[in-house]
View 1: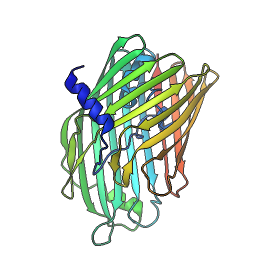
View 2: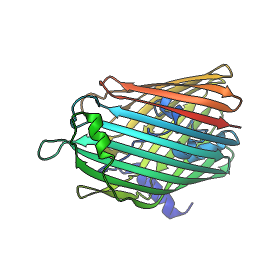
View 3: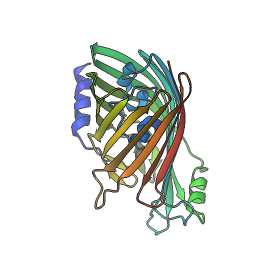
View 4: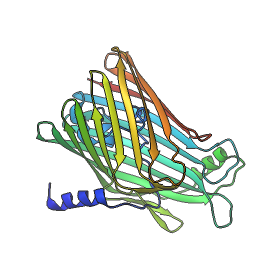
Amino acid sequence: MSRRILAALLLTLVTPVFASAQIVMEAIGERALGMGGAFTAVADDATAVYWNPAGLAGGQPYGATIEWNRSQFGDLQGPAVPGLTRRKSTFTGFGSWPLGLSYAQLQETSLVPSASGEPRGQVLEARQYGVTILQTIVTGVVVGSTLKYVRGYGVSGPAEALTGEAALDRLEEIEREARSGFDLDVGVMLDFVKVRAGVNLKNLREPVLGEIDGTDIRLERQARLGVAVLPTDGLTLAMDVDLNTVGLRDGLRRTIAFGGESRLGSRLSVRGGVRWNLEAEGSRTPVGTVGGSVMLWSGFWLDGHYARSRLDGDRGFGVALRAGY
């Protein structure tokens, strides 16, 4: 690793980032989302190309995942008011010990206040095509990188509808012009058998997806540290914390997450977790998550998760078909 790259990574770790828009980290990965987002040091399936590219080395020789997720914030069946948000994502990934391939589509549609007092809508979408490569430094230390071709857009328009859901649907139909560029994620995994530690550095090139109301919309750099403990066979306890602050539509965010995963026999796994925003002003409302996996047949799993906070209307869910050999 050159001195220039190392200096950029260190700068990412110590410099807060204040973005005009961003896609949340907790958008992909049924196991990760079921554990509240505490997955950086756990990542050992095909979603590792997103959560920590170096984690592919700790999984099975070959793995694949196809998944779909959705979350919402606020009552979408009620009036179209500022603050309503809907997030959608799909992910397809293949991973092996030396190489990973992936495709992700991430979209966020939200209503925000305007100068006139009427709600206005914003849409941010990114499609990512990734190639992941692993490199073992010494035994137990792996570095992975995901080179991404990113194509996306950001648009804004009036929220003209009676209900929040109808307003968000109309916003997603606005004509838009996509922009594209290359991006890079880098991950490190330290595996001490019973304890694992990982660092994931995302969006190092900060590609610009478009412009909303005169402001560039870019995927800002994100840095996350994770630690996982495996006290017994089949049990994993984990913690993640963001090392920098990013700006989302609803304010600044730096997340801390705790989660666990337990295998119950050979065909069932359960998991749970909680996360909250360390940068939130006033009440730091936690988001609780649960999830599980059922083996459909040898090497194939059905994964799912459900997330909920104390705020009415805030919830998320998703399903995935995962394979590993």
